[in-house]
Structure formats: C-alpha cells, structure tokens
Image 1 (cartoon, rainbow, N blue to C red):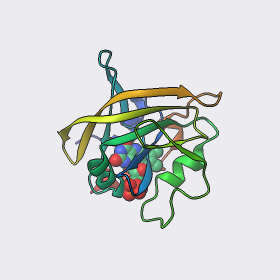
Image 2 (image 1 turned 90 degrees about the vertical axis):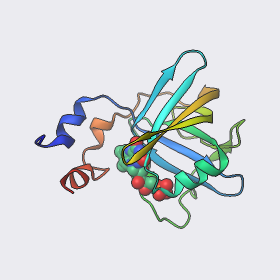
Image 3 (image 1 turned 135 degrees about the vertical axis):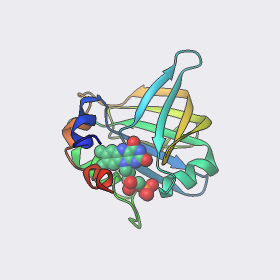
Image 4 (image 1 turned 120 degrees about the horizontal axis):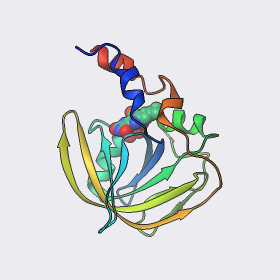
Length: 161
Ligand SMILES: Cc1cc2nc3c(=O)[nH]c(=O)nc-3n(C[C@H](O)[C@H](O)[C@H](O)COP(=O)(O)O)c2cc1C
C-alpha cells in the first residue's frame, strides 16, 4: 500500500494540455496531464484517456485530435476543460480547425495536430498513440505544470476508492 499516491505521483513531471477532439459533426475538449512524445520517426505523441469521457467517444469515431499546451496563466482553462457534462463546453473560447479537422485552442502556447495511429490498453484508461501531422507555437509563455494544479483533478479521492 503506497501512502498518499497522489503526492508521490506529483514527482513525475507532466505539463497540462487541452485535447480537442471531433467526430466530424461534434467537437469537445478535455484537460489531460498524461501526455508524452513516444517516437522520433514517425513523430508520435501518446496520451492516456479515461474511456468514460465523452471525448473518448468522439476520439474513437473521428480518429483525430489536437494537443494544446497550456501556459502558466491558464489555470482556469485547465479547470474548465477538466469538467464533464457541460452543455456547451467549447463556447467562449477561440478555436480554429487544424489540418486534421480537430479543434485547435488559439489561446494555448502551442498545439500539435494529430491523427490517431492506434490504441493500447492501460488499466482503467486507454493510451491513444497519435501521429503528429502539424504543429505550431501560438503564444509566448512558460508551460503550466501538473504539479501546479494541486488537487484540481480530484485524484486523491480516486486513489481512496
Ligand atoms: C489537471 C487535470 C489533468 C487531467 N488529466 C487527465 C488525463 O491525462 N487523462 C484523462 O483521461 N483525464 C484527465 N483529466 C480529467 C478530464 O479532464 C475530465 O474528466 C474531463 O471532465 C473529461 O471531459 P469530457 O467528459 O467532456 O470528455 C484531468 C483533469 C485535470 C483537471
């Protein structure tokens, strides 16, 4: 039994991202910290997604996504996109469509526009391995770190279960 796993896991460095998804007709976005580069050639990113998220349905159906990097000023964005069940979650933010068709968050520091390559099983999550087809810096700033978000994701409650 590991005591306070949520505190221990803060030692593993992660950024904070908003992942935009689309099935062609509907768009959504969610906050994610479990994101990493996993290959040089081809250039691949992977992220871990809870299959209960609404975003997972759209990701599976559309096979595309954007990974948008949040900055130090984007704490409230991380909170907003970390909530589920909002009726119009995308409203009030500026978006444009990337080459893949995924929604790109214009307020982010940078984005990676991706096509899903394949999925891997990971316990109660799925790992989406994604080919980067486009990327650009949008704004200046330093990335927000997961360790700076405190208990925003409610992980201490999840570990207790
Ligand atoms: C800081 C933070 C990091 C998170 N990281 C992840 C993650 O890596 N993977 C994941 O599936 N959910 C993660 N979540 C939870 C989702 O953002 C959250 O459940 C969201 O409501 C899902 O949105 P949806 O149901 O609209 O798709 C994180 C939440 C926060 C606040």
